[in-house]
Image (cartoon, rainbow, N blue to C red; front, side, top):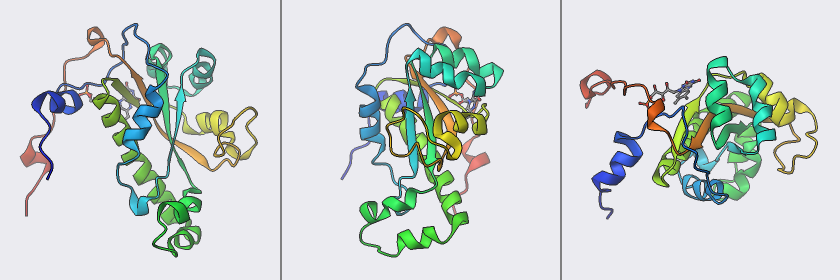
Length: 211
Ligand SMILES: Cc1cc2nc3c(=O)[nH]c(=O)nc-3n(C[C@H](O)[C@H](O)[C@H](O)COP(=O)(O)O)c2cc1C
């Protein structure tokens, strides 16, 4: 039986967590991408398919590769962030189902024969996995700045090869061109000086019903 987290933890993950655009001059440690991944990977996905793929963009040279795809309003905050994560999805995610969902032998073929199901599953679950990533990052003391204001096709061409070989890429998911971006998330230690006043949220009665 789990105990509820204490108020400090709930504040850090939800109530006082903000979307940051300005960053303190404090680096994100080399271990953080792995620590974040090793937490967020446990979040549930359909058929345990885990379609999201993540690129942690850190070096100034790699950051520059993002620049042309960004909406003007997202350029400065992204260039200033210690890390920008590309939350993407692999449309060939089902190839890994024999490993990830071994007790259901037909699942791989079900996806292989249904591109629409592949697409909706990849988008839904990579969005969820992006949210798990933000919760994990906040739980580890980092701040987040999610963004969808960018040209997905341009970014995919640059980082995922859009069907062509990607010179110098090591990860097996780069060459196939089957990986598409979903959204971006800046990571770092946020500078509260750059915050807008907190926007309200819908009240329970505006967003929820209990039947
Ligand atoms: C998927 C997603 C896409 C977003 N896209 C952008 C964006 O392109 N540019 C931007 O400045 N903020 C973007 N935001 C930030 C939201 O406006 C922000 O999270 C929201 O207003 C809540 O702010 P708060 O966390 O400080 O309360 C995005 C947020 C999410 C979750």
